[in-house]
Image (spheres, one colour):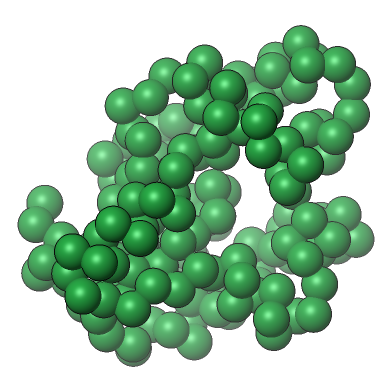
Amino acid sequence: MDLRNYPRIFVIGFAGSDRRGAAEKLAKELNYQLIDLDQEIEKEDGRSIQRICMMMGEHEYRNKEYEMLKKIKNQEKIVVICGDGIVLDDMNRQILERNGVFVADAEKSAQELWENAIRDQEHSPYAFMHQGDDQQKKEKFINLYEQRKSLYNQFG
């Protein structure tokens, strides 16, 4: 897929993928504006993504992603860094499907993504990444990866 044909490109990927690096590279190559969806949500809401998820649950976070996607849906020449679970919501996926989508680190194994995610676990919005030992965290991470893999593959 030639992403240059799209005025909006959404960079998605599982936890542990380098969505930011991929998005920054694309934005620079195409001379597009870079937008971090989570940062935009945090600015508007006043709370961190982690806090929103802890207080309101992941469903509320997905709602906020959808609201922000609607706000930027007519902007052009943008590359948008998305959260790893954006593909879980049907309405979010519909917006993504009408635009360019790049799956960051699609070729990486669950083990490689886990190794990246555990290094950055303090910023993870997932409660399981803050509780238990590393083996328990890894098992939950791998289960989550397996549950979501097919959703990412739809775009890759």
